[in-house]
Length: 90
Image 1 (spheres, rainbow, N blue to C red):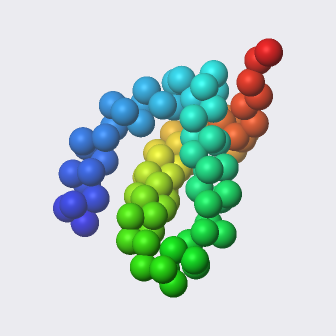
Image 2 (cartoon, rainbow, N blue to C red):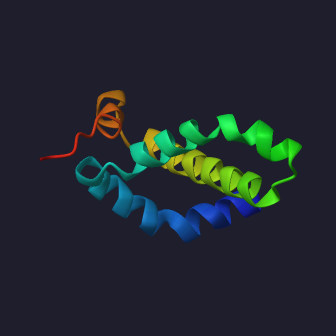
């Protein structure tokens, strides 16, 4: 759709920067780990009508989806795997 095209055009420079820096920083993997660790709280948040937490989870998932679309379209499976196997240096 037109909105998706506008979103891609507006965020391409940020996505390119993340593609370059993520193997060193591990930011995408960290975002996914935090999102997954917090999903258990979503049901409780819905029951308590904690709209702020639900909104934050929705936004995190949206960002993950947008970034993965760029990553998948620009790199091989092996390269993509490197972005999720980042290990912090001591």
